[in-house]
Length: 391
Image (tube, rainbow, N blue to C red; front, side):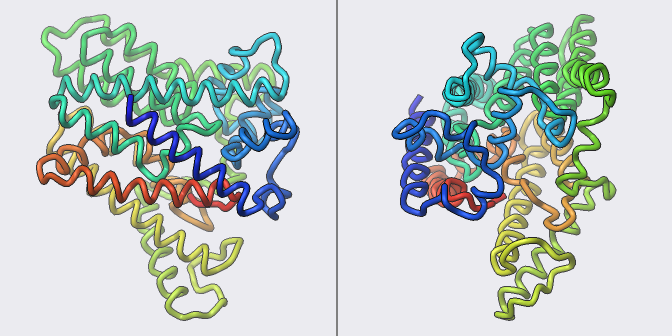
């Protein structure tokens, strides 16, 4: 699939160049957050080729795949992705084999997700919109995570798969894939909303659809059971959110907090003073943090516009899924940086890109939108590979 091949080539080429040119492995962030045994296990050329995208949360996933859970902060990372990474190379699960396996799982899942997404959108809206959708997903700035040792590609695969299975009347598959989604990320539970809507709109309504929808929370339940048995705290994954300063602030309160942070970021940049002016101090260079807060608010604006567009222009299940999924990060903002990781959360919300494809195709602007997005993807990738926090 061209969208897969060209987008991954762009990400890898930029990551490799940035990693080598900017001396990422000697940076302060690498010294603080990297774990060379997992991200640089091969030595020499192998590490040069495979380490540029093994950054930030990838370290956590690789550690879990190698050593399992400690019961602490690592419980925030759900188990299906590291389990698949380990299973692919079992019983020869060396650190080097796990790193290679992580890339294989991520890239394989992303290729499968794009293939299913194209089939789903073609079924709903026709081939031109489907073609545009997969390009817009693949070139979204935060799409860099789809080729890194992260769980985004797996989550996209199982969530799109759940939609496609329900849309084609394969309810057992829909429920199973939704359960796999909740074993990948806690946000998978919101798939209950679109699946229920699709069942209500189906004629006739098969009884097995209700049972299938009931399967969705089982992935999360299984993980909670494991944590309770092995570590004595079934809700450890909830407690672990404190490490990242995520707390429930109220429904969609993150929208307001993100707007305040963006406004204070603009003031910071305009003032030229290094004295922090935003509503809450955040670690790092104040100008960089201010710029990121403004950038994150831009992604929030896109998310709100696209979610409203999805509600108006797409089948009800798609818009409902987008709104329900956005409710989670926007109701649990991060203290120092309210909209932290929002672009990564948006990257898997495919209804947003379906709406964008519809509008872009109607106006003949798909190439322009995709090109601008590709520039953002390159910039995000360069920062990520250089061990700079982007979002």
